[in-house]
Image 1: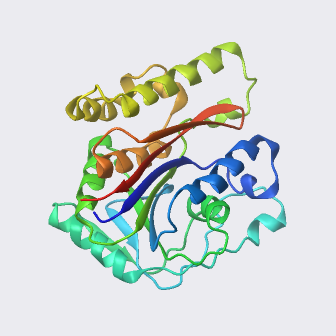
Image 2: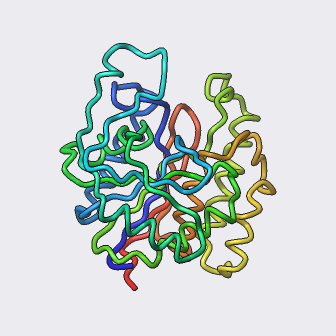
Length: 269
């Protein structure tokens, strides 16, 4: 890795962060400030919770379209534009390093960016002038496998890359729209505390940290916070790539729930 920044972010609900929703105000402010903390990247490799495939799949076209993968929003939500170019050279490098680690991977020339890509990037880099490659999750949703995907990406030779895991550290759709009771707040907080310790405590060995991430369902209220884990697994890819405790942990309130961002600054090897 050459000068690689890594960020796991919680990306909010659909297109709502782009339209002044008060429940996303803290997230909007955070993402706008996050991009200013880092050198402008030469390219972005982004793992979104909203793309699952049978094997790791990588966008490889020069000019991806957008997928409006949400419903029930005003017409303006389906007119959002984010015309960032793709980066076929990076896509092929990603495929190569994954295959060298024994991980099946293929290039995709038709699928566009989903909202897990263009919503946070609109806030972070509104000029849409940075090439972007999107990486899928594997639909097995196996946590160890996603850590290994991240580890394989350590072999990338691409200077000044930003790798983003775009998910949500809390993702229980029913809970988002249910009363925010003391019990639900406690469950949310205890899981967030577990994540904080797991990824920030430098006294934990990497072997133990990896085991905790693999066995995340043993965390307090894990299945309340993630009835299905697709929004957590981008974090596993980020951790696998970094291979160490995070440099920065930020807690943000989104949709009345505590949510996390984890940052690893300038990984240079």
